[in-house]
Length: 489
Image 1: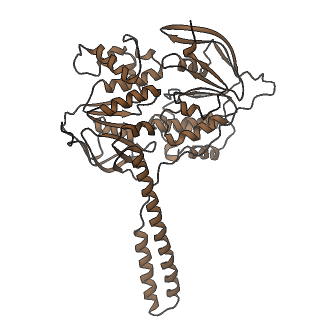
Image 2 (image 1 turned 90 degrees about the horizontal axis):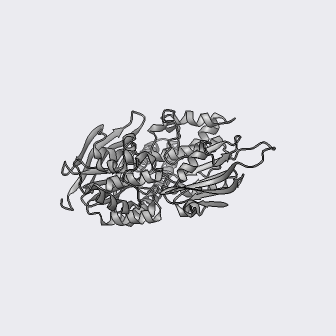
């Protein structure tokens, strides 16, 4: 396929999820073969939906989506593993990526494992893998197909720095077309040569050429120019209206002058530019800590042993108490048991760590599977509140960019980024005594991360944290660390 040929074209495409949730409004753009394109836009703008329109999983309400040729192969790295895939072995999962049997499948799997920086037995069940391992295999499943059009939805979630470097090198050398959704600015800038910007307010798509940082600067410069132009126009409008008022009171022929002044002011108003409302950043927030009974002994979580999986389970006896104002980091490579440990704490099912019965647990789970997808966001927030008002709920939600329309939707209908912001709002309203944070940067816009890190750093309850982002962890006070990689049998 020639590199200058258009491989994807949207022609006046509109799409919505019901009358109150328009996503795309007569969107037109094209992508050429070999392009490495970043899909950019605020949480909930419709980025994942646009991917599904490209694959044909969704159909436009109006307009057309063209692929050239029509039989161009497409692979989409999704954010969440399907229930069907969870019942497969690793080998069966990768075999499902191909229409025909691949006799060199094991060799292909080994090669793609090097790209995503993972090593797993091929006969292991997918459901037995950690969330981080599953995320890497979702990515590997798309990469192994070497499609004409590669669609990656948040591919750096759960990848450590070495894994991100491996993936970046792969994408820089990839000879075909690649579209990527990610909130990792440095990762995007390393390989992007163009940006599609989805405006969550206008439901339009703007196309830019250049690397990610160049485009971000271009957008910011445009906003500043538009604001300056509008400021000049507003000055002219005020002056003409003031003059019209003066002439109107003079009477006679001057009334005609006043009319022309008013018309000139109206013409100036029509000439004002609609300035883009740029991606918003969440407001600074505070997670209130639970107030315990004065007779409480202060032991919010107490570890008697710790386990890690290194080909086999290894257990080590420890005596560690996590008290109020104590922040504990759990470190270790993917698949070693970090998420399993946190799940046991959150459900109070761990025999190796006791959580105080009176402690309210706030759990940020990396795949949001602890949330009830059938509930509306509003009902879910209301259900965790204690002695707070309707005003408190809506004010907290607004700080996380969750307006009334979003709150009315079922949790399952929120984007992954919106689920992340919802989860933080939920923690604010529930006032936990123990925060359990499993990869709390996943699906979160990079603009929000400094605000979130500050809130976690200032949290005065007990916190147990797992994160693969060193820069994020560095902004948070850590009092103790358990490194599962350091456990020896």
